[in-house]
Length: 459
Image 1 (cartoon, one colour):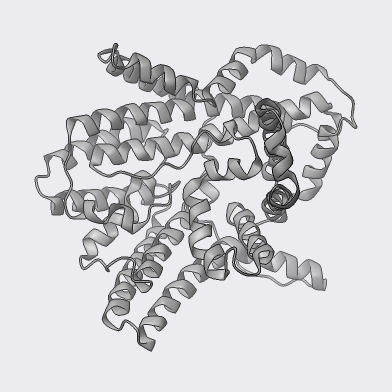
Image 2: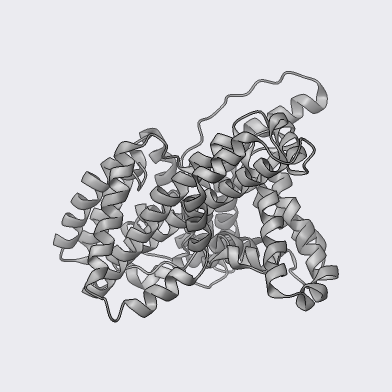
Protein backbone atom coordinates (compact mmCIF):
# COMPACT_ATOMS: atom_id res chain seq x y z
CA UNK A 1 0.00 0.00 0.00
CA UNK A 2 1.21 3.52 -0.76
CA UNK A 3 0.10 6.89 0.57
CA UNK A 4 -1.02 8.15 -2.85
CA UNK A 5 -3.70 5.51 -3.36
CA UNK A 6 -7.48 5.49 -3.13
CA UNK A 7 -7.47 2.68 -0.56
CA UNK A 8 -5.08 4.51 1.77
CA UNK A 9 -6.77 7.90 1.52
CA UNK A 10 -10.37 6.66 1.58
CA UNK A 11 -10.27 3.72 3.98
CA UNK A 12 -7.02 2.84 5.70
CA UNK A 13 -5.87 6.19 7.09
CA UNK A 14 -9.29 7.57 8.16
CA UNK A 15 -10.20 4.32 9.93
CA UNK A 16 -6.78 4.16 11.57
CA UNK A 17 -7.04 7.76 12.83
CA UNK A 18 -10.49 7.05 14.28
CA UNK A 19 -9.25 4.09 16.32
CA UNK A 20 -5.98 5.82 17.23
CA UNK A 21 -7.64 8.95 18.61
CA UNK A 22 -10.27 6.88 20.46
CA UNK A 23 -7.49 4.95 22.23
CA UNK A 24 -6.99 6.60 25.61
CA UNK A 25 -3.71 5.03 26.73
CA UNK A 26 -0.29 5.00 25.08
CA UNK A 27 -0.32 1.20 25.16
CA UNK A 28 -3.56 1.11 23.18
CA UNK A 29 -2.29 3.74 20.74
CA UNK A 30 0.92 1.77 20.17
CA UNK A 31 -1.06 -1.43 19.72
CA UNK A 32 -3.31 0.18 17.10
CA UNK A 33 -0.25 1.65 15.35
CA UNK A 34 1.58 -1.70 15.21
CA UNK A 35 -1.48 -3.62 13.96
CA UNK A 36 -2.24 -1.10 11.24
CA UNK A 37 1.44 -0.88 10.28
CA UNK A 38 1.54 -4.64 9.76
CA UNK A 39 -1.65 -4.46 7.68
CA UNK A 40 -0.16 -1.58 5.68
CA UNK A 41 3.03 -3.52 4.97
CA UNK A 42 1.24 -6.80 4.28
CA UNK A 43 -1.25 -5.28 1.85
CA UNK A 44 0.71 -6.11 -1.29
CA UNK A 45 2.99 -8.93 -0.15
CA UNK A 46 1.94 -10.44 3.21
CA UNK A 47 4.69 -13.07 3.28
CA UNK A 48 7.43 -10.47 3.81
CA UNK A 49 5.90 -9.30 7.06
CA UNK A 50 7.70 -12.31 8.55
CA UNK A 51 11.07 -10.72 7.70
CA UNK A 52 10.08 -7.40 9.22
CA UNK A 53 8.86 -8.97 12.46
CA UNK A 54 11.84 -11.31 12.60
CA UNK A 55 14.28 -8.39 12.39
CA UNK A 56 12.31 -6.49 15.00
CA UNK A 57 12.10 -9.34 17.52
CA UNK A 58 15.73 -10.34 16.95
CA UNK A 59 17.09 -6.86 17.59
CA UNK A 60 14.79 -6.31 20.56
CA UNK A 61 16.46 -9.38 22.11
CA UNK A 62 19.93 -8.33 20.94
CA UNK A 63 19.50 -4.94 22.58
CA UNK A 64 18.61 -6.56 25.90
CA UNK A 65 21.60 -8.94 25.64
CA UNK A 66 24.01 -6.08 24.89
CA UNK A 67 22.80 -4.15 27.93
CA UNK A 68 22.90 -7.15 30.26
CA UNK A 69 26.39 -8.26 29.18
CA UNK A 70 27.91 -4.87 28.45
CA UNK A 71 31.66 -5.00 28.09
CA UNK A 72 31.70 -8.80 27.75
CA UNK A 73 31.98 -11.07 24.68
CA UNK A 74 28.24 -11.80 24.73
CA UNK A 75 27.47 -8.14 24.00
CA UNK A 76 29.79 -8.10 21.00
CA UNK A 77 28.28 -11.40 19.81
CA UNK A 78 24.78 -9.91 19.96
CA UNK A 79 25.90 -6.87 17.95
CA UNK A 80 27.60 -9.08 15.36
CA UNK A 81 24.47 -11.20 15.09
CA UNK A 82 22.39 -8.10 14.43
CA UNK A 83 24.77 -6.76 11.79
CA UNK A 84 25.43 -10.08 10.04
CA UNK A 85 21.82 -11.33 10.00
CA UNK A 86 20.25 -8.03 8.97
CA UNK A 87 22.82 -7.24 6.27
CA UNK A 88 22.75 -10.89 5.21
CA UNK A 89 18.99 -10.77 4.65
CA UNK A 90 19.35 -7.49 2.77
CA UNK A 91 22.16 -8.93 0.62
CA UNK A 92 20.22 -12.13 -0.11
CA UNK A 93 17.09 -10.39 -1.30
CA UNK A 94 18.57 -7.29 -2.92
CA UNK A 95 22.06 -8.16 -4.11
CA UNK A 96 22.34 -11.92 -4.64
CA UNK A 97 21.17 -11.71 -8.26
CA UNK A 98 23.61 -8.88 -8.98
CA UNK A 99 26.48 -10.88 -7.44
CA UNK A 100 25.65 -14.11 -9.32
CA UNK A 101 25.32 -12.29 -12.65
CA UNK A 102 28.73 -10.68 -12.20
CA UNK A 103 30.38 -13.97 -11.20
CA UNK A 104 28.87 -15.63 -14.27
CA UNK A 105 30.08 -12.86 -16.57
CA UNK A 106 33.56 -12.79 -15.01
CA UNK A 107 34.16 -16.53 -15.05
CA UNK A 108 32.11 -17.36 -18.13
CA UNK A 109 29.91 -19.84 -16.28
CA UNK A 110 26.14 -20.27 -15.80
CA UNK A 111 25.71 -20.42 -12.07
CA UNK A 112 22.01 -20.52 -11.21
CA UNK A 113 20.50 -18.99 -8.09
CA UNK A 114 16.91 -18.27 -7.00
CA UNK A 115 15.67 -14.77 -7.88
CA UNK A 116 13.83 -13.14 -5.01
CA UNK A 117 11.16 -10.49 -5.12
CA UNK A 118 12.53 -7.49 -3.25
CA UNK A 119 10.53 -6.83 -0.05
CA UNK A 120 9.30 -3.24 -0.09
CA UNK A 121 11.26 -0.87 2.13
CA UNK A 122 13.77 -3.51 3.27
CA UNK A 123 16.72 -1.09 2.98
CA UNK A 124 14.96 1.48 5.16
CA UNK A 125 13.90 -0.75 8.02
CA UNK A 126 17.20 -2.71 7.93
CA UNK A 127 19.20 0.47 8.47
CA UNK A 128 16.73 1.62 11.09
CA UNK A 129 16.98 -1.50 13.22
CA UNK A 130 20.78 -1.53 12.85
CA UNK A 131 21.05 1.99 14.24
CA UNK A 132 19.22 0.75 17.33
CA UNK A 133 21.54 -2.16 18.16
CA UNK A 134 24.67 -0.18 17.31
CA UNK A 135 23.59 2.77 19.46
CA UNK A 136 22.79 0.42 22.35
CA UNK A 137 26.26 -1.13 21.98
CA UNK A 138 27.87 2.32 21.91
CA UNK A 139 25.85 3.14 25.05
CA UNK A 140 24.15 6.09 23.35
CA UNK A 141 20.70 4.80 24.22
CA UNK A 142 19.14 2.40 26.69
CA UNK A 143 17.45 -0.70 25.25
CA UNK A 144 13.67 -0.71 25.03
CA UNK A 145 12.14 -3.07 27.58
CA UNK A 146 8.75 -3.32 25.89
CA UNK A 147 8.57 -5.38 22.71
CA UNK A 148 5.39 -3.52 21.76
CA UNK A 149 7.15 -0.16 22.02
CA UNK A 150 10.11 -1.43 19.98
CA UNK A 151 7.83 -2.75 17.23
CA UNK A 152 6.02 0.59 17.30
CA UNK A 153 9.35 2.28 16.56
CA UNK A 154 10.38 -0.13 13.82
CA UNK A 155 7.11 -0.75 12.00
CA UNK A 156 5.24 2.56 12.16
CA UNK A 157 3.77 2.87 8.67
CA UNK A 158 4.28 6.61 8.04
CA UNK A 159 8.02 6.04 7.48
CA UNK A 160 8.24 2.27 7.05
CA UNK A 161 8.69 1.88 3.30
CA UNK A 162 10.15 5.22 2.15
CA UNK A 163 11.76 6.84 5.15
CA UNK A 164 13.00 9.07 6.49
CA UNK A 165 15.30 6.70 8.39
CA UNK A 166 14.25 7.38 11.98
CA UNK A 167 16.69 6.70 14.80
CA UNK A 168 15.42 5.32 18.07
CA UNK A 169 17.01 8.19 20.03
CA UNK A 170 14.90 10.71 18.09
CA UNK A 171 11.56 9.30 19.27
CA UNK A 172 12.48 7.29 22.37
CA UNK A 173 10.52 9.49 24.76
CA UNK A 174 7.44 9.61 22.54
CA UNK A 175 7.05 5.82 22.60
CA UNK A 176 5.96 5.95 26.24
CA UNK A 177 4.50 9.42 26.57
CA UNK A 178 3.17 11.73 23.87
CA UNK A 179 0.40 14.25 23.53
CA UNK A 180 -1.92 14.73 20.60
CA UNK A 181 -2.49 18.45 20.24
CA UNK A 182 -4.76 20.46 17.99
CA UNK A 183 -1.75 22.43 16.76
CA UNK A 184 0.19 19.25 15.98
CA UNK A 185 -2.69 17.68 14.08
CA UNK A 186 -3.28 20.89 12.13
CA UNK A 187 0.40 21.25 11.21
CA UNK A 188 0.50 17.56 10.31
CA UNK A 189 -2.48 17.82 7.97
CA UNK A 190 -0.90 20.80 6.19
CA UNK A 191 2.42 18.98 5.83
CA UNK A 192 0.65 15.86 4.57
CA UNK A 193 -1.34 17.89 2.04
CA UNK A 194 1.81 19.56 0.73
CA UNK A 195 3.54 16.19 0.39
CA UNK A 196 0.57 14.61 -1.36
CA UNK A 197 0.43 17.55 -3.76
CA UNK A 198 4.16 17.24 -4.45
CA UNK A 199 3.77 13.56 -5.26
CA UNK A 200 0.53 13.48 -7.22
CA UNK A 201 0.39 16.90 -8.86
CA UNK A 202 4.08 17.65 -9.47
CA UNK A 203 6.07 14.39 -9.45
CA UNK A 204 3.61 12.38 -11.50
CA UNK A 205 3.26 15.13 -14.10
CA UNK A 206 7.04 15.56 -14.33
CA UNK A 207 7.54 11.79 -14.57
CA UNK A 208 4.97 11.39 -17.32
CA UNK A 209 6.63 14.13 -19.37
CA UNK A 210 10.11 12.68 -18.73
CA UNK A 211 9.01 9.20 -19.79
CA UNK A 212 7.68 10.61 -23.07
CA UNK A 213 11.24 11.65 -23.91
CA UNK A 214 13.45 9.14 -22.13
CA UNK A 215 11.63 5.90 -22.92
CA UNK A 216 12.19 6.34 -26.63
CA UNK A 217 15.29 5.57 -28.69
CA UNK A 218 18.22 7.60 -27.26
CA UNK A 219 19.95 7.47 -30.65
CA UNK A 220 17.17 9.63 -32.11
CA UNK A 221 17.17 12.14 -29.28
CA UNK A 222 18.73 15.58 -29.63
CA UNK A 223 20.91 17.26 -27.01
CA UNK A 224 18.18 19.70 -26.03
CA UNK A 225 15.65 16.90 -25.73
CA UNK A 226 18.00 14.73 -23.67
CA UNK A 227 18.63 17.53 -21.17
CA UNK A 228 14.93 18.36 -20.95
CA UNK A 229 14.05 14.72 -20.30
CA UNK A 230 16.66 14.21 -17.59
CA UNK A 231 15.79 17.54 -15.97
CA UNK A 232 12.14 16.51 -15.76
CA UNK A 233 13.17 13.14 -14.32
CA UNK A 234 15.27 14.89 -11.66
CA UNK A 235 12.20 16.90 -10.71
CA UNK A 236 10.18 13.69 -10.54
CA UNK A 237 12.64 11.99 -8.18
CA UNK A 238 12.82 15.03 -5.91
CA UNK A 239 9.09 15.70 -5.65
CA UNK A 240 8.27 11.99 -5.40
CA UNK A 241 10.71 11.28 -2.58
CA UNK A 242 10.44 14.59 -0.73
CA UNK A 243 6.65 14.37 -1.11
CA UNK A 244 6.63 10.98 0.61
CA UNK A 245 8.94 12.34 3.32
CA UNK A 246 6.59 15.30 3.84
CA UNK A 247 3.61 12.98 4.13
CA UNK A 248 5.50 10.83 6.64
CA UNK A 249 6.51 13.85 8.72
CA UNK A 250 2.95 15.17 8.56
CA UNK A 251 1.40 11.89 9.68
CA UNK A 252 4.00 11.68 12.43
CA UNK A 253 2.90 15.08 13.74
CA UNK A 254 -0.72 13.96 13.74
CA UNK A 255 0.26 10.92 15.85
CA UNK A 256 2.44 12.86 18.29
CA UNK A 257 5.88 12.11 16.77
CA UNK A 258 8.47 14.51 15.37
CA UNK A 259 10.56 13.03 12.56
CA UNK A 260 13.62 14.92 11.42
CA UNK A 261 13.64 16.66 8.05
CA UNK A 262 14.85 14.60 5.10
CA UNK A 263 15.19 17.30 2.42
CA UNK A 264 16.25 20.93 2.67
CA UNK A 265 15.68 22.45 -0.80
CA UNK A 266 18.61 20.58 -2.40
CA UNK A 267 18.20 22.26 -5.81
CA UNK A 268 19.14 25.59 -4.24
CA UNK A 269 22.63 24.22 -3.46
CA UNK A 270 25.70 26.02 -4.77
CA UNK A 271 27.91 22.91 -4.90
CA UNK A 272 27.57 19.15 -5.15
CA UNK A 273 28.77 18.84 -1.57
CA UNK A 274 26.02 21.18 -0.39
CA UNK A 275 23.49 19.29 -2.49
CA UNK A 276 24.22 16.10 -0.56
CA UNK A 277 23.95 17.93 2.74
CA UNK A 278 20.41 18.82 1.72
CA UNK A 279 19.31 15.63 -0.12
CA UNK A 280 18.04 12.51 1.70
CA UNK A 281 19.65 13.72 4.89
CA UNK A 282 18.67 10.69 6.97
CA UNK A 283 20.65 8.41 4.63
CA UNK A 284 23.63 10.76 4.40
CA UNK A 285 23.89 11.03 8.18
CA UNK A 286 23.52 7.25 8.51
CA UNK A 287 26.55 6.62 6.29
CA UNK A 288 28.45 9.40 8.04
CA UNK A 289 27.80 8.15 11.58
CA UNK A 290 27.83 4.39 11.05
CA UNK A 291 30.31 3.93 8.18
CA UNK A 292 32.51 6.98 7.52
CA UNK A 293 33.39 7.94 11.10
CA UNK A 294 33.93 4.33 12.35
CA UNK A 295 36.29 3.74 9.40
CA UNK A 296 38.38 6.70 10.50
CA UNK A 297 36.52 9.68 9.09
CA UNK A 298 38.84 12.60 8.36
CA UNK A 299 41.53 11.27 10.69
CA UNK A 300 42.96 8.47 8.54
CA UNK A 301 42.44 6.93 5.10
CA UNK A 302 39.99 9.68 4.21
CA UNK A 303 39.89 8.98 0.47
CA UNK A 304 39.34 5.27 1.07
CA UNK A 305 36.59 6.04 3.57
CA UNK A 306 34.90 8.36 1.08
CA UNK A 307 35.15 5.67 -1.60
CA UNK A 308 33.47 3.09 0.65
CA UNK A 309 30.66 5.49 1.58
CA UNK A 310 29.85 6.51 -1.98
CA UNK A 311 30.19 2.99 -3.34
CA UNK A 312 27.67 1.88 -0.72
CA UNK A 313 25.45 4.91 -1.36
CA UNK A 314 25.18 3.95 -5.02
CA UNK A 315 24.68 0.27 -4.23
CA UNK A 316 21.97 1.08 -1.66
CA UNK A 317 19.97 2.84 -4.38
CA UNK A 318 20.11 -0.06 -6.81
CA UNK A 319 21.72 -3.48 -7.31
CA UNK A 320 23.41 -2.73 -10.62
CA UNK A 321 26.53 -1.03 -11.95
CA UNK A 322 24.56 2.02 -13.06
CA UNK A 323 23.77 2.95 -9.47
CA UNK A 324 27.28 2.08 -8.26
CA UNK A 325 28.74 4.42 -10.88
CA UNK A 326 26.13 7.02 -9.93
CA UNK A 327 27.48 7.00 -6.37
CA UNK A 328 31.11 7.12 -7.53
CA UNK A 329 30.23 9.92 -9.95
CA UNK A 330 29.42 12.11 -6.95
CA UNK A 331 32.58 10.94 -5.19
CA UNK A 332 34.62 12.48 -8.00
CA UNK A 333 32.88 15.85 -7.58
CA UNK A 334 33.23 15.78 -3.81
CA UNK A 335 36.97 15.09 -4.03
CA UNK A 336 37.43 17.80 -6.66
CA UNK A 337 35.50 20.31 -4.57
CA UNK A 338 37.48 19.43 -1.46
CA UNK A 339 40.96 19.53 -2.97
CA UNK A 340 40.72 21.69 -6.12
CA UNK A 341 37.45 23.50 -6.79
CA UNK A 342 36.51 24.70 -3.31
CA UNK A 343 38.35 28.02 -3.29
CA UNK A 344 37.46 28.65 -6.93
CA UNK A 345 33.74 28.11 -6.27
CA UNK A 346 33.87 30.60 -3.40
CA UNK A 347 35.00 33.31 -5.83
CA UNK A 348 32.30 32.63 -8.44
CA UNK A 349 28.97 34.54 -8.29
CA UNK A 350 26.16 32.57 -6.62
CA UNK A 351 24.16 32.25 -9.86
CA UNK A 352 26.99 30.38 -11.62
CA UNK A 353 27.57 28.16 -8.60
CA UNK A 354 23.87 27.25 -8.70
CA UNK A 355 24.15 26.43 -12.41
CA UNK A 356 27.26 24.34 -11.85
CA UNK A 357 25.59 22.27 -9.11
CA UNK A 358 22.36 21.88 -11.09
CA UNK A 359 24.17 20.72 -14.25
CA UNK A 360 26.35 18.27 -12.33
CA UNK A 361 23.41 16.77 -10.43
CA UNK A 362 21.12 16.65 -13.48
CA UNK A 363 23.75 14.91 -15.60
CA UNK A 364 24.09 12.27 -12.88
CA UNK A 365 20.48 11.18 -13.34
CA UNK A 366 21.51 9.62 -16.68
CA UNK A 367 23.05 6.79 -14.66
CA UNK A 368 20.18 6.63 -12.17
CA UNK A 369 17.31 6.33 -14.65
CA UNK A 370 18.43 3.31 -16.66
CA UNK A 371 19.10 -0.24 -15.50
CA UNK A 372 22.00 -0.96 -17.85
CA UNK A 373 25.14 0.94 -18.77
CA UNK A 374 24.53 0.64 -22.50
CA UNK A 375 21.33 2.68 -22.34
CA UNK A 376 22.95 5.24 -20.03
CA UNK A 377 25.92 5.74 -22.35
CA UNK A 378 23.62 6.14 -25.35
CA UNK A 379 21.66 8.77 -23.46
CA UNK A 380 24.86 10.51 -22.36
CA UNK A 381 25.85 10.63 -26.02
CA UNK A 382 22.63 12.52 -26.72
CA UNK A 383 23.28 14.87 -23.78
CA UNK A 384 26.63 15.73 -25.36
CA UNK A 385 24.73 16.90 -28.49
CA UNK A 386 26.22 14.13 -30.62
CA UNK A 387 22.78 13.46 -32.16
CA UNK A 388 22.00 17.07 -32.99
CA UNK A 389 20.72 20.11 -31.14
CA UNK A 390 16.92 19.99 -31.35
CA UNK A 391 14.14 17.60 -32.31
CA UNK A 392 10.40 17.86 -32.76
CA UNK A 393 9.40 15.62 -29.81
CA UNK A 394 11.32 17.54 -27.16
CA UNK A 395 10.11 20.86 -28.57
CA UNK A 396 6.54 19.66 -28.39
CA UNK A 397 6.99 18.42 -24.79
CA UNK A 398 8.60 21.72 -23.76
CA UNK A 399 5.87 23.90 -25.23
CA UNK A 400 3.01 21.77 -23.93
CA UNK A 401 4.54 21.58 -20.42
CA UNK A 402 5.87 25.13 -20.18
CA UNK A 403 3.60 26.03 -17.26
CA UNK A 404 4.47 22.76 -15.49
CA UNK A 405 8.21 23.38 -15.87
CA UNK A 406 7.87 26.89 -14.45
CA UNK A 407 5.85 25.48 -11.53
CA UNK A 408 8.45 22.77 -10.88
CA UNK A 409 11.28 25.30 -10.82
CA UNK A 410 9.36 27.59 -8.48
CA UNK A 411 8.41 24.76 -6.13
CA UNK A 412 12.10 23.76 -5.76
CA UNK A 413 12.93 27.10 -4.17
CA UNK A 414 12.16 28.53 -0.74
CA UNK A 415 9.83 31.15 -2.25
CA UNK A 416 6.56 29.24 -1.62
CA UNK A 417 7.57 28.65 2.00
CA UNK A 418 8.43 32.31 2.53
CA UNK A 419 5.17 33.43 0.95
CA UNK A 420 3.21 30.99 3.13
CA UNK A 421 5.02 32.24 6.26
CA UNK A 422 3.95 35.80 5.48
CA UNK A 423 0.37 34.98 4.53
CA UNK A 424 -0.49 32.43 7.22
CA UNK A 425 -0.77 34.88 10.16
CA UNK A 426 -3.15 37.02 8.11
CA UNK A 427 -5.01 34.24 6.31
CA UNK A 428 -4.94 31.46 8.90
CA UNK A 429 -8.57 30.41 8.30
CA UNK A 430 -7.72 29.76 4.65
CA UNK A 431 -5.21 27.03 5.54
CA UNK A 432 -7.92 24.34 5.98
CA UNK A 433 -9.37 25.41 2.62
CA UNK A 434 -5.93 25.07 1.02
CA UNK A 435 -5.48 21.61 2.53
CA UNK A 436 -8.91 20.51 1.35
CA UNK A 437 -8.33 21.74 -2.19
CA UNK A 438 -4.91 20.08 -2.48
CA UNK A 439 -6.05 16.75 -1.03
CA UNK A 440 -9.26 16.75 -3.09
CA UNK A 441 -7.42 17.70 -6.27
CA UNK A 442 -4.79 15.02 -5.67
CA UNK A 443 -7.50 12.45 -4.99
CA UNK A 444 -9.23 13.27 -8.27
CA UNK A 445 -5.95 12.92 -10.15
CA UNK A 446 -5.23 9.57 -8.50
CA UNK A 447 -8.63 8.27 -9.62
CA UNK A 448 -8.38 9.75 -13.11
CA UNK A 449 -4.76 8.92 -14.00
CA UNK A 450 -3.01 5.61 -14.53
CA UNK A 451 0.48 7.09 -14.01
CA UNK A 452 1.19 6.93 -10.27
CA UNK A 453 4.59 5.23 -9.79
CA UNK A 454 6.25 4.74 -6.44
CA UNK A 455 9.93 5.32 -7.26
CA UNK A 456 11.40 4.15 -3.96
CA UNK A 457 9.65 0.77 -3.87
CA UNK A 458 12.93 -0.94 -4.83
CA UNK A 459 14.81 0.39 -1.83
